[in-house]
Amino acid sequence: MILLANQGPTEIMSTNPESFPKEGFVRLKSIIAPRGPIPIGKSTWWAGVKAGRYPRPIKIGPRVTVWRAADIRDLMDQAD
Image: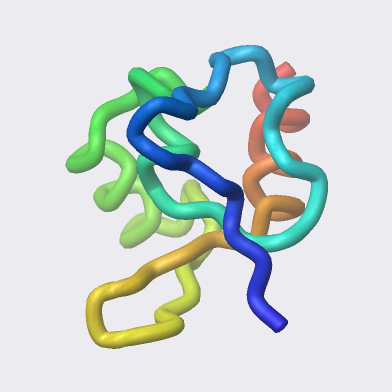
């Protein structure tokens, strides 16, 4: 089973890290600014993934890329 953070157009996630899911998978728009808790842009994120600074994604379909929520929480904890 694949769990995705429910992120509809009217459900904008707070930048509060406490509201970030603890398990499952999240899409990029739930991770980076302006909706997500990590205040960087898309190209900076992908450059960080390529350089190994950020977690590697998981492809679950030809046009669907996700990250483990636990990996993103670990990244946020390292920044504290």
